[in-house]
Length: 50
Image (tube, rainbow, N blue to C red):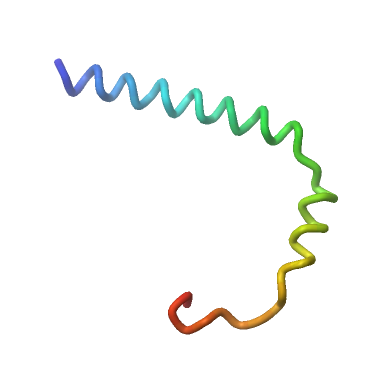
């Protein structure tokens, strides 16, 4: 029975997270995102980040 309640809790958490992300996405701006992304240097990553 414990596994069932845990899986139900995880499902509820996933649904809540999905709702949260959708709400945040509504407040987002593609133009602001692209402006921030444009500040990232176009360089090769360090060897340890590949």
